[in-house]
Length: 206
Image (cartoon, rainbow, N blue to C red; front, side, top):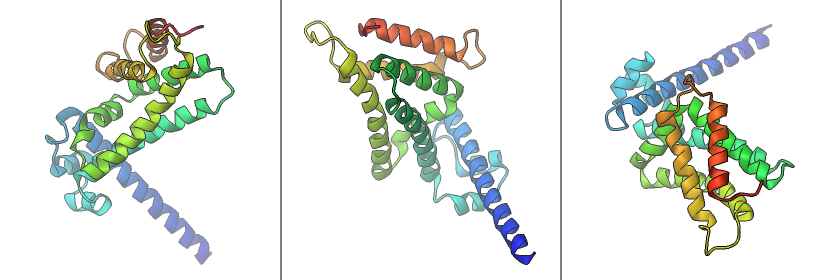
């Protein structure tokens, strides 16, 4: 009985720790999205998350640690989704379609995560920023690999896969600015349009 009570206590403490961190991270992400990294203070985050500043510093070393975790978690989610696609038995064409669909739908439904990661990561220290850049490049590399395989080889007429990847991500990164999850078009409809546009522009065979 005593052992069971101790286990329940540990579980409760663990759940509280996770809940507090998530609450603080969500508040920080909202404020970084609305005010930018420089415009949001630790006091602002404390007020939005309904904790005091000391509690924030208990869970996170500083404001950069909050930003790093938001960006790192966002890229981890996207990488994990992409790895499942790359490891699937789909054809290269369908892998590219799935990658585009998954990315487009996710950033439309999570504009704060996507925009904060894209725009505010430049405020990280060189060491933390490099980790984010490495994750970003690894993620983009999966797209680049497929584009290299699928794009026509006549380089006199078509751009290379690396430049094509930059164009693809330029389009995907723009989605949170104009496409809303509750807008006239559904996230899946927009994702389908993005895939059609990219495939047509890059002459990807069907």
